Image 1 (cartoon, rainbow, N blue to C red):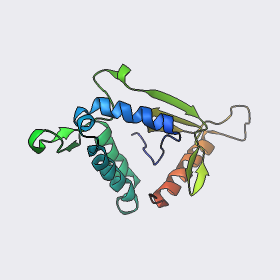
Image 2: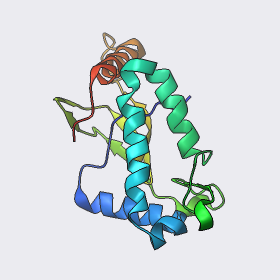
Image 3: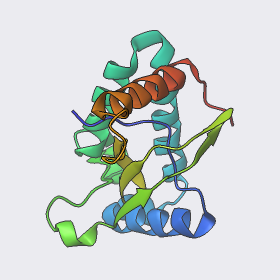
Image 4: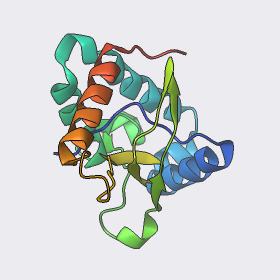
Length: 159
């Protein structure tokens, strides 16, 4: 299962590129940009609910959104249309970024070793450990990720 968290692109340029990708994948939103706010509202509500429903349920709900299973009444006569964040038909239309030491600033700074973003959305978070120091093992990386997830489960979303 993919782990989604409250990571986000940290610079304006990256956010603008991500926004353009989302508009291209969702022509209804491109025609009426104010609809993007409704989608963001829904996604923020999911994140805020993490303390009530748990991280696994939040990840499952985000997975439904990312896989195109969620719809919004954006079509003609309020017909429900899927909201797309990823292009599964032509994977080359997506923007892939792998980061090293990605910084997340929320109450405290967290720096996961590796983050894979697709269209600006973090889909994989990993922790890399050195093979040179025998005192550091994969268990240390697993512990770091576990502790980061516990911290996120206790965080709330700030406006």
